[in-house]
Length: 223
Image (cartoon, rainbow, N blue to C red; front, side):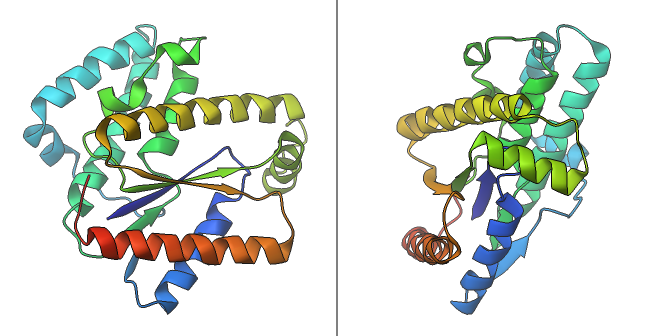
């Protein structure tokens, strides 16, 4: 089973992921954090999914505005994530990442030439495996800007940048909701970091309990 965290940069995905992992491990769930692992099985993935790879090339050029440099970066990203999913789909542990296919899709759109984000239903074209659970982590623009400036030492990062990231994030969420309605294979949770420490701890516990219930109910690998 695969869990992804989706949200704008600075929303607190990594912190939430770590807190959730600790609670799940306390409940006896085997966790595999793949965020920092680089699993290279791209050639095997291409051989096993040639048709999907062809469509990825086709839409990559369209997304990039027929730029070879942008096309290379887009294909490199999607091949890396898709091959990782292909490798991990049969593992019995609960795989968790804050750098999965959903998060990468938002970054790909930033490389694209489309100004109107709603014109691109990007996930179905590029993804061979979908996560079982997506946790959407949200925060307000002011909090995002402060965290980005403090964490990345980027004093030029402004609220306008955060608002643009939030807009892209909301489009991703709406796309996921549409896919979930059509395929029914994705469980979506929503989490906001705009709260007190006590409220945050309670929300993490509730999220962990919901994940455990879904995990025990499914007890299978659906991608």
